[in-house]
Length: 179
Image 1: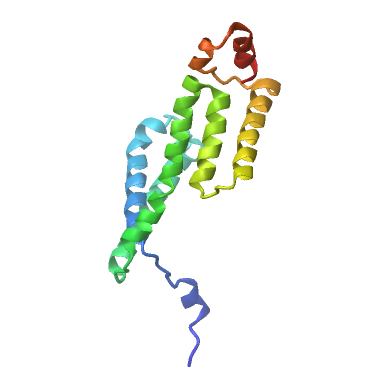
Image 2: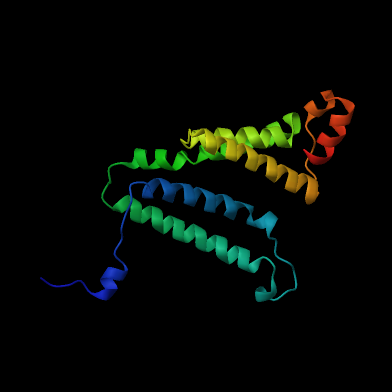
């Protein structure tokens, strides 16, 4: 039994079920970036080509288009692999956490940094499958400590929650400064 050459092993292609979907998405992104090159990275008259601010963006985006097209072609001529849909579904599961973050950013100005951080910390812990009471309490306290450190000590400017206006006068001042 002969062993394949080093060069052959170097260029051996290991495919995954979602390769074709990734290739199409990457080519679409590359073409979109290429369509924006003229306005985002314009050429300056009278400058040498290597001194142009647009030179390297053009080189890199054109290379992206070429390599994305080659990736797509290699995916199209390769044998079809089962499991493409399950692979893409696995990738899309990560979108859930981006949605959690967007919800958090939306709720903070309304409910305030402290309650939102504590609720989301506990909610994400529950979402991850942890149900132990001590863990949930620890995460709620961690959220509170994060808020006090960022808002109170580091003076990070985070908008106060709209609900803080309904607090009693003395507590409202504390909430606006620390929470």
